[in-house]
Structures are given as structure tokens and as C-alpha cells.
Image (cartoon, rainbow, N blue to C red; front, side):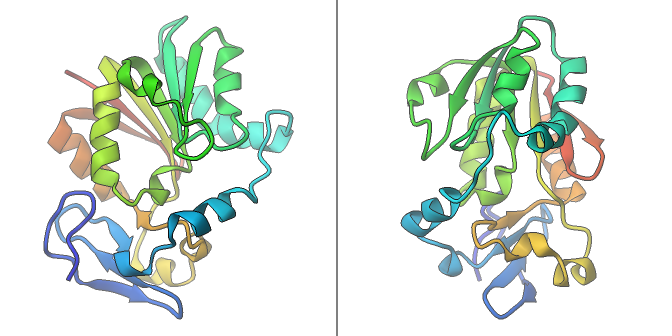
Length: 212
């Protein structure tokens, strides 16, 4: 039995198993996660990320990211300060937000490694297609809460678990760098625990406001 990597519950029975990995589900926060013994090492993980070809001139990629940027821009005050966490090798969302007058900083464990940006606080942070990659989501979640000012926003994009039947045929789980899978219930658990306002936008865009 493995503890939940998000809330540390010990109640994590098997949820699903396929040819490559075993998936467990937390009975407290509803997180589905890969058996930690079956995760990639850092070298293999980065090699996978190096294959990504996202860049700011890709119109389709901008359209994808606009599903977060548009609702977020409606929430944040003009000339706010933001952090794009896990921006990857081709930061794009940060440029889109800068185009609307916001000041942006970047952090990525592999590609933008200046940790000094993690010593500041921000009006908002964004993390698009990041949270499903986290080996220690509990620590990163707490880090995000500390990075955001009271009244500030956390804007996330990640595809969410629906049920085990949908999970069985879900392409999202087949990416070996995807190791934790949130559901609506998981975000509701976190929002209640950490006193956050929660709003779901479409099926994979989540906005949370730090109320204190």
C-alpha cells in the first residue's frame, strides 16, 4: 500500500491496472495515482519533455492555452504580476499574458531553473498541463499556495478523471510522464481544506482563488 502523494491518506486501494502500470485511488481526496515504483526516472522524464515542440508562434497552441487565459484575464486586475510554473521549453502562455499588460516570471524544473522567482509572491500563477506530472503534488500544491497573494488566483489546465470505465480507455493515462490524475472531487477537497474559491471552466480548466 502506498500513501496518497497529495493528502497522505493510507487508504489507497487499486483503481485500475494495464499492461504497463498500476493505478491507485485515494479514498480521502479521490486522487488517482501511478504506483510510485513504476514512475520514470528524471533522465527518462526529461527525454520525453525534450520531444515537445510547443512555441509562441503556433496558432493552434495559442488557441488551446486561450481556454485558460481568457477566463483568467477576466479575473485578474490590470498590470498584475504572474508566474507561469512548469512553462516547459517553449513558454507561450506567459507571452500571451504579457501581451495583455501583465508582468510574468517563469519557472520550470528542467528548462527555467532560476529558483529565485519562487521567493516572491504573485497576483496569480498558471500551470498548464503540469499538475499531472508531479511526483510530489502535496509539496508543489503548498508551494503554489505560498506563492499566491491573498485574493490571488491559481489557474490550471489538466484533464480530469471521470470514472473507472472512462479511465480504462483514456489516452491521457498512457503518457508515462502522467503520474497523478485529479478529479472534480479532488479539487473540491483541496478547495475546502485550503479555503479556496473554486470554479471549473470546461472539462480541463480550473480556477482557484486564495481567499485568505
